Structures are given as C-alpha cells and as structure tokens.
Length: 384
Image (cartoon, rainbow, N blue to C red):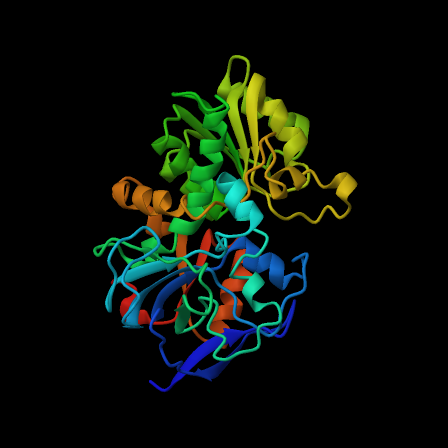
C-alpha cells in the first residue's frame, strides 16, 4: 500500500471527506499502526460543533479512541510506554493527550500531568504542516515517531483482546481516574451507593468502573430508554431514572432519593456535561457526600454559568479531567480482567469507513441513537 486513506473535516459542521496521503518512511523510533476500530468520542462531537476553545489546524483527522496493529516498526522502537515488548503484529492503543514529560507541569505535578503545557497530540498539530498528517483514528493507519515527538506514548493491548474492546480503554480510564480521585479524599468508600448522571459512553462505562472498584449500588440518571438506559441496567445499574419522562428537577431529585433511600447517595458523578446537572446532582447526595464532575464541555456559554470549570481545571471539588499517562494501563487491565462480566461490545454500533459512514456515525452519536458509534477502517481486523 503506497497511499493511505484518511477522513478529514474542513471545519465545524463540515461534511467528512476521505482523501489519500502518502505512506511515510518509517524512522528508527517510529511505527505505522493499522487501525481496526475507532470510537466517536464526545470530544469529537464538540469539535465538530465548534466548541473547542483553541484554534485547530483544519482540515485534520479526528478520532482518538483507537486500537490497531503494528504493520511496520523501526529498529530502535522496542517497547511501549510501560516497557512491554512490541513489534510487528502487536496490538496497541494510543491516547488523545500525551504529556511531554519535561515541562514544569509534568515535572512538578505528575498526578495532574494531563494539564501538560506542551502536549503532543492536539498541541502537535497547531501549526504542524509536515506530511503525512497521520494523526487521528478515523483513518486506515496512524503514524507515531518518537524522534519527532519524544513525548509520544503508546500502550500494548493483550494479544487476545479484540480491537473493538481495546477502543474502550481510553474512555474507561477517564472513569477509573475520577473514582480514584474520590477515593483519595475518602469520598468513595467500599460498598458505596453511587449515582451516575448521564448514560452516554462515559456514563455506561462509569457503571462498570464503579462496580469493579467497590460500589455496592449504582443508579443511572439519563436518557433515552433505548438504547442507553436499557444498557445501563445490563451493565449493572440497579435502577434508572429517565430524564425525558421525569422533567422537573425537583421530581428527579425525589425519584433518585426514593431509590437510594436513607440520607442520599455517597457519591454522585456527572458524566452528562449538562449545564444543570451539577446543582441538581448535589441534591442526590447525603450530607458529607462527594460530587465528581467529568463534563468537559457545555453549551452554557459564560464562565459565570459554566459549572464545568471544576472539571476542566481538575479541581478538588472534585473535578476530574481525563487521565495521565500512567492511568491508561489501568483501563486496559480492567477491560481485560472484566472482559466477560459486562456486555462491552453491545455498546458499539459499527459504521463503514466511507464518507457516508463517518457522517452517519457522528450524526447518530449526536442524536443519541447509539451509545458508542464506532468506525471500522479495516474490517478484517475487527475480530483481531
């Protein structure tokens, strides 16, 4: 293969365009990865809605919940970020944000290195104009080069893990880190009652993460009933509250507290990103409970009305923004260890890697017709 097909957008609201770029020459510390599957993340949707707060180098390739197989690798690239041996045929995932490891923030605040001053994914492509532009996972292949960008990080997946399952390791890691932040302040005790606001991909994965990390009860608040609330219950939520049926916030608060019983939930986590979720969610809590905000984007507008700043600033209230480089193996490990305990793959609706397929994947995700739209650039790899 001399040319590689990639999907690009010209800007917010633009239709996807599939074009070809030349296959790169592989450097000594580089690898070319053939993509089996890549999810449509909420971040992708917000970028396409024009919500990304910084300039972006349009046109470029979206997609960062990706998993693929190494098809070519340089002689000097021997291991992944965790020191696991890799080579041609190894299965990998790549995160959307790679801390550089050497700026002041990475050196002095490693537990929040996701706030790195010079990240090497989105940051790399601001003004980056050197081909082949193989960045995002909505493409047949991606290219990584550790000589070009020493902060690059890649993670080996278990040999037997399907690439479809591997695409969930990045969003699941965000959930794990959020619960760990609560644990560090004694806000997520063993056998806790947990309420999850939002039943999108993060909200569904948060149900599994909560149960795997010691929750006794999990209640999901979201919509629509099909496919999202149904799937939340299949993942282990003992009860669900449909926000499309229970419209008034005070009625939802009563419904949740009736389910929870007693004084309220021990922990509430917002995975919805809705502007009103925070003020409503804290009323689900018992006194002394813990609220965790994971919503990175909102349409609320001004800083004065943007509750989600506690997430984007990674505050101790608790806001939890994404993850650090050392968190990602936890997502991979939890997926693998719990691979038979949850209907992981039933989250995914698969789409062809065509302009029509990508457009439909994004449209269905935005309309909440799917839980996780997943694009398949190389169908022969989806069972690999």
